[in-house]
Image (tube, rainbow, N blue to C red; front, side, top):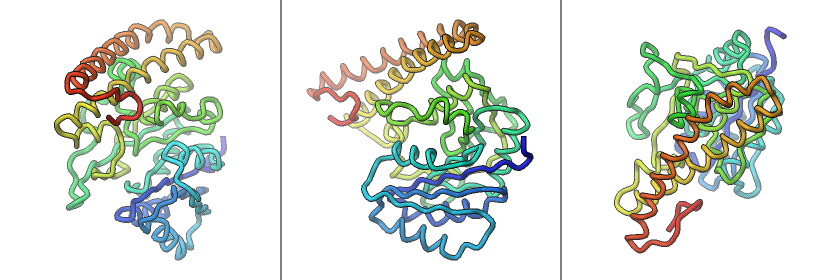
Amino acid sequence: MNDTPLASFTLCSYQQSAFVREAVRGALAQTYSPLEILIYDDASTDGTWEIIQEEVAGYDGPHSVVLHQNETNLGSRANHLSTLNDSKGLFVVLADGDDVSHPDRTSRTVDAFVRRGVSLVTCNGYVFDEGDGKVVRMYRDPNGPIDDTIEELVRDGSNALTFGPGIALSREMIEIFGLPPARLDFPGDLILPFWGTLLNGCHFVGEPLVKYRVHAGNSSVGRRVERATGIEKTVQEERQWYLHSAIALWEMEQLDKFAVANPEKTGLRDRLHPYLIIQILQHARRWAESRQKLDAAGNNFVGRSGKV
């Protein structure tokens, strides 16, 4: 393998004018080369796109930079898919317009890919508050035990690898699996590590190389549950457990198909099936409990939309 393969750094933005300047600067400051940087904005109307253009206009560094703004809002999944389809690097580092990557993030990530021959790498990161910019905590204590095994992933639905702001994946993984289906609303932090483990494995870099900003605009289901109160919290919990049940069922289907196409993975399938069955049952029970609370409160069916 070439010691310095082309890598891609993809940054997707939408309505992040308060944060995107620092995110773009972090992308342009990457020390790895050769590197292409793809910055795709999903039809923002709050000045995000103008800030991106302003920051890139003065750039004279070694990286090639591709800018694109969608004519209409496509949603997070479609925007990420566009960057992945257009990227050419052997490895692709994922980023969003409200997070900040350390200059060495791509270098350390590619080094892990090359040395370990894995399909996905997740780096550690700092979680910080949008208001005062102070670090709230580190995603994982680098001095503590780090569990990045697929057993924990399918048993608990997450592990050290499921830190979305720190994920990077190999070109091979994109070509084989693509992106999760639209019905799962692109929970890439849950599904991409699962795919990576099935293929050639994954690795967690304990060094914090990204800053994850906690703010009101974070759109993950988990963040919506944390922010909600009263009946709205039950609505979001119902959505959360519905989604996690659907993901666990989908993972079992993917695991079975992968084992059929790759008989050497049959042992892995047999080892993971019991964990997935338990997870499906647990999430289904939690979903039913949330649904019962909403029914008792006189709310209509929520399901995929997450809205009453």
